[in-house]
Length: 186
Image (cartoon, rainbow, N blue to C red; front, side, top):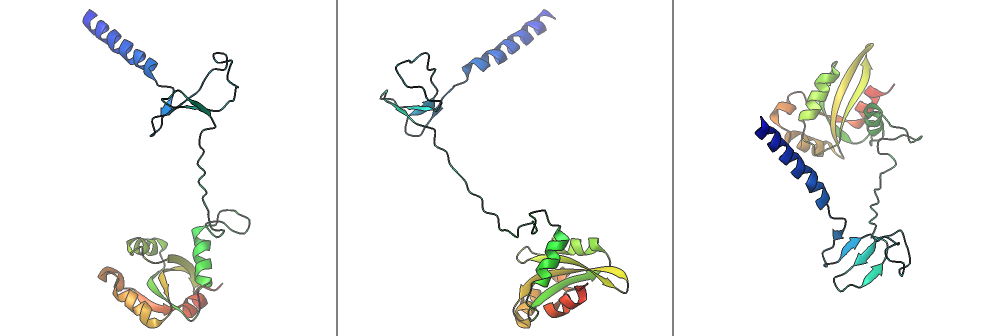
C-alpha cells in the first residue's frame, strides 16, 4: 500500500515539476528569439509594451511582433440576402434557377413528391456542377426536382448526362431552363 502511495506521489511530483520547464520565448528561423523584458530590470531601455527581438549577437532591436493579416473576401451573394441575413438553401436554389438563361439546358436528375428522395439523388451525384433542389406545386401537392448543372445547348447537356453514373441516368433527362422556370413559378 505504501509503495502505491509513494509511486503516486513521485508521478505527481514529476508532473508538477514539468510545469516549471516552460520556455517564455519563441525562436525564429534566423536564430533570434522573441522575449519580453521587465522595464524595472532594464531602466536604461525605453519601455514599450511590445516584444523585443534578441539575436545571438546581443543586439536588441525593439519592434512590434510581425502581424500577418489574412483578408477573407466573401462574395455578397454567399449565403446572405439583401439585409445581410442568412438565406435558406431553398431560397438560394430558387434564385439560381430563376437567374438561368431560359434558352439554356439543365439535367433533371429526379422529380419526386419526396424531398428525401431528391436529396439522396443529389448527394450521389458527382460534385462537378451546381445542383439544386426545387419545390413546386403540382395539382395542389408539393413535388421536388433535383437539378444538375447548366449548359448552353441541348448537346452539351446530353453529353454531361451520358457521363453520369448509370444509376443516375435511369430517372434523369435533359430539360430546358424555360420549362423548369415555368414549372416552378409561383
